[in-house]
Length: 526
Image (tube, rainbow, N blue to C red; front, side):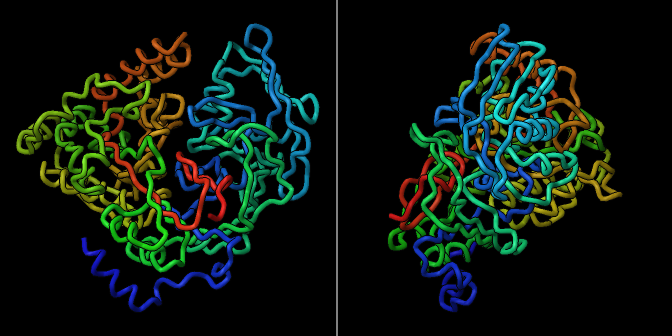
């Protein structure tokens, strides 16, 4: 890469780095460069973490998770559990308002939970365990369960996409298969729709009538969400060099994900503070379309696992510094309770491209065109896609590298048809480590076919293990199930894990920043 030399020319001209005029010179406006463009505004719609971050600004949740992933009441005042764990009664806090001035009522939450449960895997598990969900009065939500579901608060507090956003009943009535168009929540910020510039800018204004919880520390998504900025302006800058220049020039206050090769320059900027934001890191994935040839053939998927060099994928993003990446990475986030080394030997073996090429032919590969979707405006995912394309070519796969933008890729991956009809074969993407903590939030390991994540992998074995995880009586039992899930995934290959890497965020003039996913409450001018 030649970002450093390119940056000199950009910085000299200054033209490409100018910030919107209204964002300059105001200590009450936070200027922020997000990881990628905010293509979708509906927090129940997409697995994109950028939409999750947007969602937590605008919408609130019934429960929040602290830094140890423990749920606490958030919009909820508290709850009672009766009938041997089969009846949960949740009371809303008083005085909660939506951004249009209407009070938050229990029936709004019931409608929101139902819509979210139709889209989200964890929400779906909760709704399948629910016999009746009702709102007997404006502040009371009642779950009558078919069987005990001890993870109910965890589900309603999940911080991974798709987040369990509470929205007005009229908005939540939108068909789950259609995106909402009215972005009205009860969270600490209002979304300023009239200032949105698709692909360039999103604006949030402090919601002055928001009522934070009255006690406890603000940790994770739990506790008081106190806002100290009047406005937050997200400026999308896909080119990393331009983003670095904008930060170094003082035109932006916070760059969410600093490109690794630009860290030295950004770190030398006056007042800059670099830190790892997400301790669980980011995990790469290469996802095959298992409904179409050649990846509908499990033997071909297994053979290709022998070509995966996780270190090569990671080094394309972070370089050779092992402190910023971890391999081998299995099907759960390294260093967390559900992760193990079970079954990972194929990822440790030396790569033998010639052997993989022969074995692919023996497994039935006939030279079919493989369409690989790569978002060129997402720096880290493009690196994963580039390494993936090179890997496929080296083992004799007929690759059609489709360069696209992130939003278009998200749309195209919904096409279930053959490549001749606009379908696809593989796409590269990444997830935060928190997405892969356990089966409740990790949709990539599901085997629920057409109802599941793009790629639509179907496996009765994995679905049985998924359900067994919820029924396991304790931590040891859940860990045992996850070892079996990893074994099954290495054999069936619903996707290829590409390793875990960590990124730094860059701020200037900001204090109170939390670790974990990007949050905009609790931070204030330094």
